[in-house]
Image 1 (cartoon, rainbow, N blue to C red):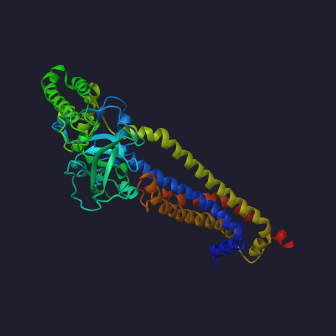
Image 2 (image 1 turned 180 degrees about the vertical axis):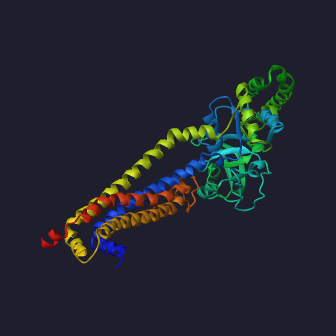
Image 3 (image 1 turned 180 degrees about the horizontal axis):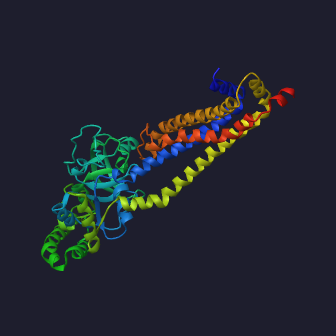
Length: 455
């Protein structure tokens, strides 16, 4: 009979105690696996691989606020930049792609954030080498004025499909001011594991047609002066703004003079460029180095701010999530260490009951080293078995929890996610088993054969 077989037989003789000891190891490993997988997903979310653009251009202010509102859509924008600024960046020699983002309002059902943008947004990668796919047709575009494309979570929670119509709530999800305009779903995105899954995208031109989305003339002019100067406002801003204001005033007077019961008018006036604003602009530069120089130059100016989205998010991750991750990892290490102590106590306490058995083995010709190896093998088997069980339990828990997390938080987790650091777990457990089994093994090694057989 091999030494491992003898060790296994000994473990089976102490079935309950051995099972509980191995289970404590398994629970510690399971918790560590879950922590590693979840934080691995979060780390990739906050990394460059999770965002397909080099820079985000927004108004001067907080870099973190620009990223949180534009990328994660969990913070309201503070200010906007002129639409003309987007057009200027679109023609910049260093810029490869410029995509406008206009934030505002929520869906009446579910309170999902609204993003006004262009169809080009869906033609570019949303992350490194990852592109958008639609659940219907991958060539979908927002060609109609009131077309909309929705994320997978929006479709699932609201029960919307292609052809569904919806209205927007002004200002916030808790507001009771519902806009009259109705948007029609023309496409549903496949899951991406990003905030896009819980976002409703509408045609940017339709966004400006909604009441209150065009900037009042006085405010728009002040913004124009901030960006382009008074001289530019006199020649480029004032003529179209005054014409638009006169048209709207004339229409308001005409409607006021209509007899009661007149059906509401459904036509819309095109908003002039000078009256439009965007929350931010996504930039894909022709060269990575260009993005660094571009951001530095814009930082020295007074117009807007160009932000590498990774830097503020990594700082946030280190300050908040990093500490949580460290605490959880320390706790799991402590749990595994306590489990190791449990294995030590279990084996060491069994030595008093097994000294006669060990003495008989020695009398039958077993060497001291063989006895030591049997005790060490017991410790290794308990740790290894508990570790493998913990890995299976951890990944089983991730497999079960992944769709729940996706539904509740909109974070897409691969059910078969595996972190490279997990490869260190089993070897580490074997080292722990060797340390834990060393003292009981030495105790067995020093067993006095004559004394134990006599007693």
